Length: 435
Image (cartoon, rainbow, N blue to C red; front, side):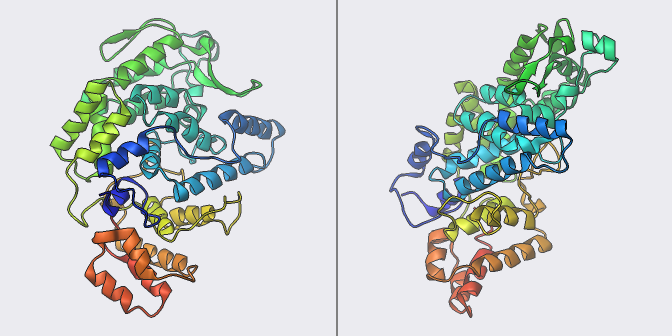
């Protein structure tokens, strides 16, 4: 039977007591079969955000008067989907891959396009091939803006000879180090520079009627380039070929298999588990659906020994356990479920879409479990529990944790002085901190 522990491990926390009666493997497969059922209300394509950004800059507006409502609409609809999704495994994969291909609000004017990036470059590819996701990510304005590739100019290109400006290696370096082959593949600084030259000309056209990706030939470094021993032609096609090469490289499959096992199973991935997922990627040509389902065949953690929940994971699980949400959140409403969730992320140290560095947020328990972090969780959960006026906290506990609920926690909740205190004890318990 499908267990609560599996739903917590692969999803965002149990929301109700329903059970499909499926095995874990069949439940996972059902999550990834058929279309993505997520509904995103009130948001448009990336071009809408770029138009707003362009008009703000043109009029030299103070603040973000045109971008702000676009961003608020993205937050409202994305958070509603986290709280209400009926495909929690698919949804977790979306956020996992977004973190792998991090775009942060900390730089690059990405506020206008970060939500669209997630919907356009990540979400459609979580059950497809990794190389297709990689290409979509590298061509998306959000990534090009975040890592400054629009400012990268080939020194020997027409624009380079005129402006005397040169390469920006940010995108090339992060793609090699974080997104694909990783340093274990043995690439060199010369490879980083060559890859940066391959990607010159890949930028964002803000002046077009429908702004978006553009290849600027005049900024592209001419000539054949060599990356990790492979030659690639000049022009946009050279970049496409290089990304196909990297996206299907054995070192890439090893790297992303390690990341997947770390996220879903253990802070210290077992070599055998990594090899299993890596083998599936190799055999399938980078099929992410097959690799994701392979996670379900790995040994399960001992009861209560699953992954420690990050702040985002924890806050989402709390609000799902409380069945928060229903009617769509209104953008900017400080009392909406979406606002509660985003406020929780920020209060607990993981503000939405604001990773400090391109390597994204940590998956390791040690980075989230300091005493001050645990105290903040208890305080936030107690405040969330104050909104619950009806129902038995023990029912919430049984639905949220199932057999993982410890007798000690059950006893403490039974003796709590109020519903609020009982729920706070549940959400502060060691077993709720893990999935």
